[in-house]
Image 1 (spheres, rainbow, N blue to C red):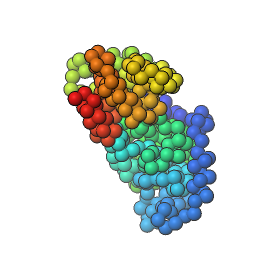
Image 2 (tube, rainbow, N blue to C red; image 1 turned 45 degrees about the vertical axis):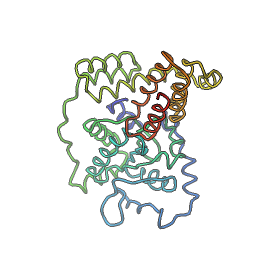
Image 3 (cartoon, rainbow, N blue to C red; image 1 turned 90 degrees about the horizontal axis):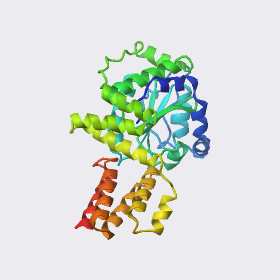
Image 4 (cartoon, helix red, strand yellow; image 1 turned 120 degrees about the horizontal axis):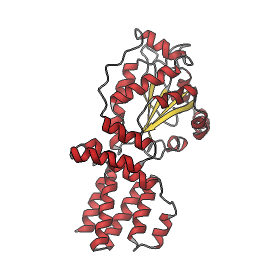
Length: 332
């Protein structure tokens, strides 16, 4: 997972045309405009000119639960005044439950200088499709009606604070609503002193940003050699190993595996391809079936690979819980 850094702030300052072209929000906008408004679904009142969006009672809105029906007003329209940070999440996503509370806290501290828009991808699949979401948590900044920068994966609070500060600095001149919100809050809030970053993680994350999966894997393995119980390094290592495989995943592997159900290597490759395309349950089911119909080394390979995929999602993921029960039945 990439660390939010100055490069992302530069993207925001430039209102990256590449990102804006890659994500087409026009379909969502048209659907939202076509829906009749109702008291139950109407968004909060729009912002006064030159100020941050408010709730109609003077207090700034900082966090919103957004749906396909409210996307136009709550994301596109609000982003004309202040940046809207879109948090794409799902109930089953463990890392989402780590990231979202931190973003909510920072949004509240921001006092309306930016707005956090939380979107459940399962309940709002068209938004997920429009943003071309492949994995979550995913955070996308919308400013002036267009996506300008993004990152994936949970991030520690100090890095998120730095990222938000850089984002606001990059957009403050173009978006007067930022300065207006900061003025209402008594001026720009100075972020607390950041905890020093672990240089070992910095090295691993830098390697990952450069696409050096082998280097990132070696760096995380070195951390775990010194600290076997380091949960952050364990989770990151599992992600890096999968990313390395996903980078070369062949979508046709699924069809080949379906045609050769007894080929364990084909089943493993197909499961990776399915996870890479968000077919999580299908991947788990495939490997559970493989475990059930094999024995010896083949069974061990399928089981080990399946357990490795579980580590990508965390123990609280309902799909992992269901697949673990199925795996136990297949084994015993």
